[in-house]
Length: 216
Image: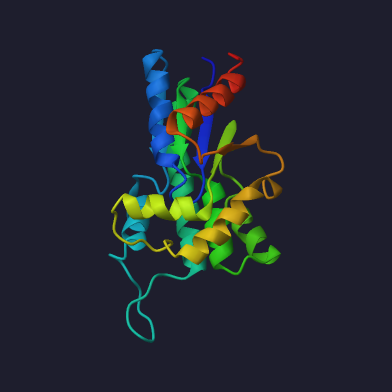
């Protein structure tokens, strides 16, 4: 059996990765093609722990009371979740010929943990090394949006505050994502202007996927 394609959608919070992952899933389903949608943090045991940390339901002791874990601890947890995610979900589906769509992957770890860790070359390289054995995607679509647009979208969805919602941090992350291929020179990365009508963005995403699948 031919191995399935592994496709990742990335971007800052509010870029639309979850929306467009679902739309792309629907596109595959409408054509009767096997597809599996997943996400990171995953729905596995480490991923569920991470989701509780991100929403502030789990904290660690600090000098002034409970606080979120350090960026180093978060980097290690995300890497552990990614290895489990790959072994439990991504690789088995790919081996069965299923296209796997992931809402975020190790690009998020390099962006988020490197940025919160100071953004130095040493920090970036350490986070990359933690994820050295992560299965590489066949295509990564980075959804680019201005910081103010992403902030408006985060506010409009009415979700509770999460660990990385700080506006200044998200601006820094946006600049990091704009040059993400610098840190993944061997990956197939395509930037998509996501500051356009949803269907226009979805159409471009479908085009890039068709090129990957030799259908264009």
